[in-house]
Image (cartoon, rainbow, N blue to C red):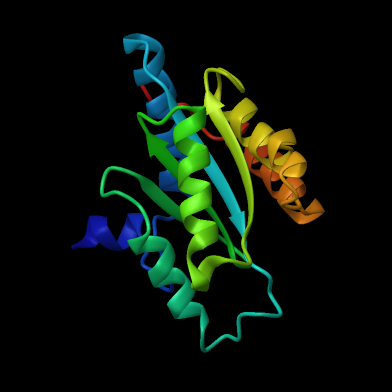
Amino acid sequence: MGERLAIYDRETGLLAYWYFILRLDEEVVRCVRYGQVFSILLFEAQTGRWASDDESVLFRAMAESFRSCDLVAHLGNLRFIVLLTNTDVPGAMVWRERLRADEQLRDLTVGRASFPADGESYEALLTAAGASEDVVADSVQVTSAMKAASQELATHSQNQPNTAA
């Protein structure tokens, strides 16, 4: 019970940021070793659309929209990040389109990065997700807050001890 409280955010029920970064680093190591792929999606909801009473609906929708093997974390300020295990670039695009088709999640801006195509470290992937060119080309705006958040994640993550082996 204590471990669950430590790795999950109380407010959202989603993974805590520190644990997500730990698992992302482990996934990079695993995929390098076994020659596999994965993708990450970086989401930001429009703050004006979601009243604080409705945020729990958003949190629940994010938690229920993905497979049990995928990792979903809340980054604060209605920003989320998802690690899609064994998912290549086309697969990540399918997930993005599924979410855009969901009425509740239609207003999300989405950034995407895939390993190893967009980077071979978790820092590079976080940066790429915040500046995803294909997202801009598909008329989904990547906000400056998303770019700043991905830079902040990458910078903060570099300062954390590497515990993956």
